[in-house]
Each structure stands twice: as C-alpha cells, then as structure tokens.
Image (cartoon, rainbow, N blue to C red; front, side, top):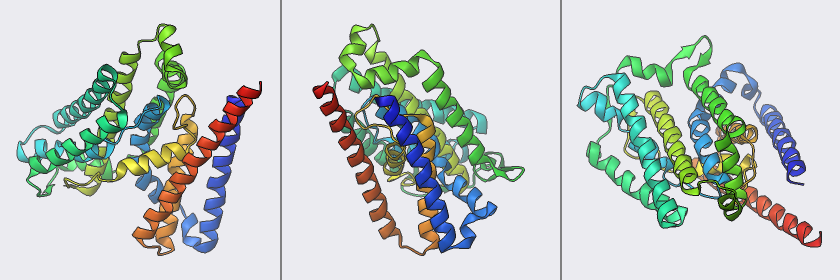
Length: 317
C-alpha cells in the first residue's frame, strides 16, 4: 500500500512541477530561458544541499531546527580572514565543527530522549548567538579568490553550486538506497520499537543522522558564503523553514519511515521555481512568506490525511 502511495506522490509532484513551469512561462516568457533556469538551480543549491540531511532527520520522525544557525555559524570566514588560515584547512575545520554540532544534537536526543524540537531549537539559539559573538555583529568580507569559486565559479555554462548540489544529492541517494544505514533510517522512522528488537542500534543511528544533517548544513553554509563573499551572522536565519518545506513537499512523511530522495529533488525545484516565478511577477517578499507557509501547511496536512487513511485501512483489514 505504501509503495503505491509513494509512486502516486512521485508522479503527482513532478506533474505539479511541470504545471508550475508552464504557468510561469505563460505569465512571463523570460522564465523559460536557459539563463533563468540555471539561475533557479543556482538559487536552490543551498536548500538542496541542506535538504539531504534534513531528509534523513525527518525520515526518522525527527526535526532539525539548527540547520539555519549552522549555515550562519560556519565560521570559515573568521578562520581565513581574521586568522589567515589556509583555505583547504579552513574548509575542513568548518565542516568538522558543523558535523560536531549535529553530533551533539543527536547524542542529546538519543541519550536523554529529549524532544528533537526542543534540542535543535536550543542549538539554533545558542549558535545563532555565538555567530554574533565571533564576528562582533560585524560582517566579515575579503575572502580568497580560490574559495569564492565554490559559490561564483562555472564549469562551462554550469554554476559550481549546482554541480555541488547534484553531487550531494547523488551521495545522499546512495546512502539512502544502497547502504544498510539507509535501510535503518526507514526502519527506525517506521517503528522504533520494532527496529530496536531487530537489533538496530538506535542511538548510533540517531547520532549518525544528526551528524550528517550538520555536515550537509555546513556544506550549504560554505556555498552561501562563497556566493555572497560576505559572512553575515544572520545569513542562515529562516533557512531551516525553506529546507523543511522542500523535504515535506517532496513527500517525506513528517511521521517518519516514508519518502524518497528523488521526490525531495522535485520539492527543492518546486520551491525554486515558485520563488523565482513570484519575483518575476513582482510579488512582495512578505506575500512570498505567506504563500510558502500555506504550501507547508497543505503539504503536512496532506501527509496527515494520508496517515489517517492508512490507519483506517489497517483497522478494517
């Protein structure tokens, strides 16, 4: 039953994406140009990268509100500009720090059984504040040219951020579909007690998932920093909302245990197309927030209705 529903979801979301493209092309013929479509892909690259880790978290039935703060907190700018650290070393150190933040969230959730909502919200607040402490509330700029290529460079006509996003999605899909850890994510999200009885190390899996979420958020933060060429302490504020919207819109159940990475890609593209289309239509940023909020509410509502129908079907059977 679930596999049939997942197939319907997958087809429906891609059909919706095509309809959106057609709609915005009719409204503004400039939408369906190679330049604009590459711009859309470049704009969603940060959401796309971070959504891979968020997919794992939501598959577990969890949530990670610290994503935006990790994106802000990635303090590679401080390492490179204020300390003069080598670019490669600064990148590696920043990714280690972001992964460690995710690991801390995971171990607190697993060991103390605290709600993921509370733990990651506290983490969001702590590291958002610490991002201001590091730079004193003053933006850091003058990044090395070699680093800026990560966010501003091109390989032929393709922007580097898009290539990074594609690679991350490929890695994320491989982990989910081709490794036993990926199967554990589904098993744990579907029924934690059954997963425990089958011998799955629940705490290890949770720590791994939140560590991966931190890692991918860190990579997204590096791409954002390289694109902007300025480290703002509030750069990632609100990004967790867009990332969660992409994942849920992509059909990953908020109750855990159900979802596909390929559909998350469609969810990311829908948010990108929607944002770009609304800009071309001169819709205000405030109204864009309202529309995105409604979309998230509808996506979660549809998932809840589906879960209720599944429960009724099981009860009848």
